[in-house]
Image 1 (cartoon, rainbow, N blue to C red):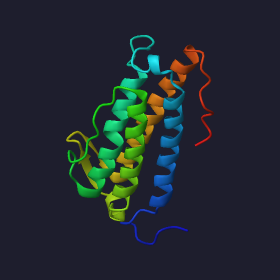
Image 2 (image 1 turned 30 degrees about the vertical axis):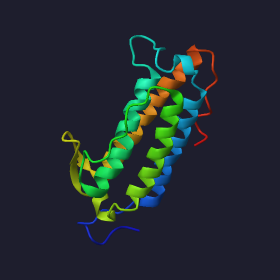
Image 3 (image 1 turned 90 degrees about the vertical axis):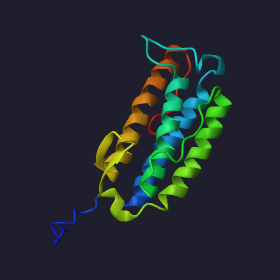
Length: 161
């Protein structure tokens, strides 16, 4: 079916399905964090890349704040603290997942088509903003997979989201 209103793009995925897709990635990344040896999370790296603990903190600092920003158009109002242990990362991860769902319910459907500038630097439609966050998480999770394999730890199956 094609849209009869050319000014309104056809939707290829519902907002609920987009949230579930994102949360599926978050569930998988959480399992990667769980498998990481505690003593290596903030110390192990390869080729000068950041540790997985640093990468996890970056993800924590982007996901919830992005959902908050899309809901409120305030890009600095919600920021989780930096974690310094696996237990703390997992606790903040779970809190962030809950916050994402709370903020998601407040995002007007039209916001996903609006061009926004998040955090004063990323400009694009609301759906692009979410896809950027998901892409960034997938990228860093891939680094986590490499680290786990280098440490002799079997990562979780990537297709089980």
